[in-house]
Structure formats: C-alpha cells, structure tokens
Image (cartoon, rainbow, N blue to C red; front, side):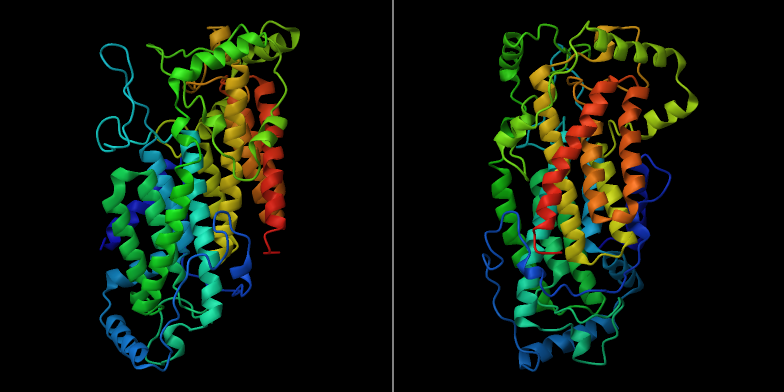
Amino acid sequence: MKNTSTLLAFAMLIGLVACDKTIDSATTLPYPETSLESNAGNWKTYQLVSNTEIPVPAPEAANSAAYLAELDELKNIVANTTEAQKEAAIFWGGNGVARWHEIARNLAAQYNVPPNYNADGTYPAPDPANPTAYPRFPFANPPYASRAFALLAVAQYDALVAAWHYKFQYNRLAPYRYTAEINPLIPENDLPSYPSEDAVVAAASREVLKFLFPGEKPLLDEYSTEHKSSRLWAGANVPSDLAAGDSLGRLVAAKIIAYAKTDRMGQANNQAGVQSLRDDATARGITQQWHSLDLPARPPMLPFFGNVKPWNFNDSTKVAIRPSAPPAVGSDAFNTALKELQDLAKNRTRKQWEIASYWADGVGTYTPPGHWNRTASELILEKELNEIRSARAFALVATAIQDAGITCWDTKYYYLLPRPTEVDRTVTTSTGIPNFPAYTSGHSSFSSAGAEVLAYLFPDHTSELIALAKEASESRIYGCIHYRFDCEVGLESGKKVAEFAIERGRNDGSE
C-alpha cells in the first residue's frame, strides 16, 4: 500500500502538470449520497447491449452464516485499521470515478512526449509490444488523450449502470446497516452495497488504463488494490461486495477494450497513406499544402485519426458536418487573417502572452482534452455528484471531446491548410508549432465540445464555460498558431459535435 506521503505527492504532481497553480481535486473529502438513483440500472449504455449482459450471482443473505462471518471479519479489519489506511479510505472515498480520471490525466501528461529524431534524421515510433523502451508507448498526444479519457469514462459508466441494476435487484445494504459495531469513516447511506460500486470502478478503470498505458500495469494494479481495500478500511463493504464488483468491472472493461481494438485507431498513424491524402487534395484543387516545419521533417501526427469511429454519430454524419473549405492561400480573406497574425507577432500584449501560455497544453501536459476533463472533474465535485452521475457526466463530455477531435482531424487532413509560420516565416509563435495542418483548430474544437456538454450538465456555469472555450480558442490566435477562421470554425464545429452528445444525454433515461 502507498503511504500517505505518496498519496499527497501524487495529488500535488497532478496539480503541477495541469499548468495551473491550484492542486487538482485530490483534497476533496467524501460527501454524502444525496440521491440513490434507484432507476440508474436502466440508463442507456454505450457498449453493453443490456444491463444484464454480464450476470452477477445473488449474494448471501444478510442473515446467513456466511455473511455474518464476513461482518465479523470486517469488524476486525476496521478495529485494526492504521492511520495511513484511514487516510487512504478518505482519499478514495472522495469520489472514486473522479480519482481514476486524475490518474488518467497524470499518465497522459507523463506520456505526452514526442520522440526525438535518430542520427539518420528518421523518427523512432513507439512500440506497443515494448512500451517501456524508448520512445515509450504511447505518445499521448491530444487525439490519443481524448480517446483514452473517452474509453475510461465509457467503461466506468457502463459498468456502473450494470452495477446499479444488480444493487437494487438484490438490495443488500452496507454492512454498517446490519451492525452497530461498525462506524464507517465515510458518510452513511442506504445505497445497496452489492456489488461494490468502488470495486466496479477500480476494476474497470484499471483494465482500460492498463490497455492504454501498458507500461504502467504494476502501478495501476497497486492503485486498484488500494482503492478496493479502502472500502474495507472505511467499513463500507464486505469482501464479497468487492469480489462481485471487481468481476463485473473487469468483464465490462474487456468489452470496452474489444471495442477499442476495432475502432480503427490502429490505422490512425498510417504514414504510408499520407501521399494519398495529398493526391486527393490536389485533385480537389488544393495545391498549396501543409508540411512539417520540424527539422528534420517529422511524420504528420496521426494523419488518419479522422477515420476513428465516433461515439455519438456515424461516419456519414461526420462527412455531412465537415466544415466547408477555408479561404484559399493568397485570397483576400486569407491575407486579412494572416495580416492579423503578422501584427500580433510584433505586438502581443502581456495578457495575450499569458492566455496563449495558459492554454498551450503542449508537451508534458495532459493536453486540451485533459484540460476539459479536469474542468468536468471540478464541476462534478463542486456539485457533489454520486458515482454514477459522475460517470455519466465524464462519459458525455469525453465522448463529445473525442468526436470533436475525430471531426477536426478529418478536416485538417482533408484541406491540408499550411500553418501561418509556413506561409510567412516572419510570423513567430509564442509556443511550439503543432505537427499537423492548421484548419480547423483542435483547441477550439475540443474546447467548444467540452464547454457545450458541460453547460448542458451544469447550466448555472454556462456563461463562464462558453467564455473559457472562447478564450482557449483565441489563445491559438494570440500564439500565432492559427488563423482566426481556424478558430471560429473550430468553435462552430465543436458545438455541432456536442449537440449529438447532449441529445444522447437527454434520451439516456437519466432525466
């Protein structure tokens, strides 16, 4: 088990990689359940065909000899809990769904490191079969991070919907409801404890993140073990609650991983196909095309990420909502946008520098999708959502953000618009130059999608969320990374994508 100092160090690390001066949600204390959501077992799932697709056997009755023996075992565990274990129980009791998203953001930041070039000018590719060798697998760039957060969120949500079905089918309450000798370390509630929602979340999160970050399997196993054990230390579950939850979460994760293996992400880095993208663009009259400005030239970042399966609409819809062409290089509209950047490069204000830096979310951070994942986490904890409401919120936001990335990358490599710095080398940026085409802006697309879904979920924060998305978008103009039309159209595109997730939310049975 990690000791308390390790837990706090982990929490502080997350805060540091966020490019923010505030520590992430790691200091949140457990809060009471305000709603048991007794109908949540009927909410619409993403990948599970039904809430009973994965069977969970009935538990022992609360008056059975087997359960009474478990109660005695738990009494002994609680009586001998150490201070470090009590602190871990409080740590994980502060919303396990959100805790695992903290872990995911931390991993995304650690792995958001593009490899350097070899002596011969080529770039090595991360090898999923050897994830700890240089360069480590994965390179958690923005598209990869968006998919990671979505897969994690969907696994948590589907697993919890199934768990809620069985909770209210079997209706075995928490152990402290059957004996006054157990005083829990977290707020009491009447939510059925079998299967354990925390064990479900721990197992589903563990397995999905091990699939996404295979070099971190020992660490993820350690976190999962501690998360589950914390429920014993807290006096909130007996071992059979945890065993049933772990099994259910693991089996749901297997289905999400099976989906991920067929979502076409495996072809997203098809460098051999880049010339076909260029040829197709040339055939449509696009002759001035984006090229890498890295020296030596770096292979384009995930040129076929736009072909990955979307979550909330199909491929034909993706094409239908693809933005129209940007102004042609050299046209009056293009030159007007370029002139704005030429002027900014010479006359950025201090405030514009600050905004560009704050929203950069570049190498070594958890990227723009992680920035909005953190915003979702902060609002979830502010409103003290329970586990299943938290999972639903993360799933709606994360799938919308990945869909926005898919749509954006489809657009980028369809039009292949050169970056401002490629058109005019005197345009200096305030951050690094991304290694993919300009139109549309990824920051704008990710941010608009995230902000719109969060505004649906937390309507009292609508104005500030939309303002944040606009600031994130304009930050790329201030940094001279994007033309204004890249950002404006990116915001519009992200909003369109968000509407599909919002429509799903309105019809998932939770309202």
